[in-house]
Length: 519
Image (cartoon, rainbow, N blue to C red; front, side, top):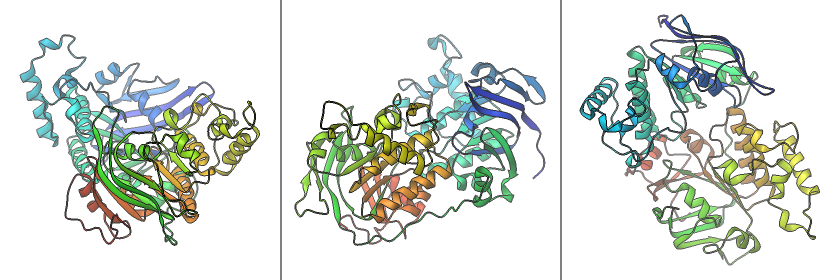
């Protein structure tokens, strides 16, 4: 591949937050007509580095050059003025505005004076050039996740961006949507755009990028052309050591019914139907993967089992290993479920909003599961402290001490604390929602190992995931949700990613491969 002209050069960039060095003396080039993937563990400084390029942070030391000219980027406006646009993981859109209104928002203080025909014409020109599909008059609240992401990209192109930064762009997309996005990204590259992708998905890195830059502990330690790389090479460069990338999948041993969902219908907090008459079984010693586009009812499913969501109709029966008669969970809150002796652990999607209290340390967060066990008016602190210390050592949680507020820890360490606490309860059913979302490969494999250990102990594991490669490698069966309905339950050992992706979008024609719902 011929050497392309540099669009951006970062020289000696450093950034600290208090006593923590996020980036240290980073030197990095980004070229026109190239897709650069930025890889690194959680906390390696990838997003911080790109946020400095996007004007959200300002470097403490170093220099940024755009087309060989030194520039000062002190705000997102400065970034736009220099042709830089960034699409963040959490979209910056106004739901009640149309696509066109979101695109021009901020360009004209008086929305009533927008030349709507000219705006729509320019949007169509951008879409035709790169292969986007967007309706300028469509309201954001009527868009799916893929359409919102498309809108974010068109928005920065409309403003003249030649350097695009995409932070975890496929986190909530189906394989088909991801491939469509990659085609558009390649079209932008071929038109001379410089594109940076921040991602943890190594297969995507190898599929779409031309070059990979590796960050480790805030420093840029290597750069390699993708044609010379593979998953093993990239992982070892990220970690600085050899890593086994094989996900274990032991065969289920004597699987028996542990949880049975019958004709379950649930509404979300806005009153919309989130689950529509779904039925399935979760077995002991088995990992049941849940696949679906974000917002298809995964959250409400887990919350209804945990007693956190009201059930409109249907049944949730729990059958412990030492009982013959099942226990009905519908209509009971989490406290009542615990008092019935239901041994259930739930790792929610929202780690610090719903799973842990950010202002508390590890030991106090352990206490949240056991404070009712005390025999006096004072809470028992010895056992939670011992549990916190054990989790810190066994899972290698990086924290100054167990009293440090968990909100100060990286995402991967927060997840270790949460998963460790729930597993310590010795559950018979373990439910996890996006257990490895945004986590680096080392922490992700730690979580996979913990989940497999529970499976070997006979726990029924319900694993909601977004990476279909992981779901196919880790699960025994995969239940696919689309718009609140079950579109298929597949044998994870024999089905393909494409089959799962088709069912996620409401497609049909996929056999259940012998993994029928009543199994």
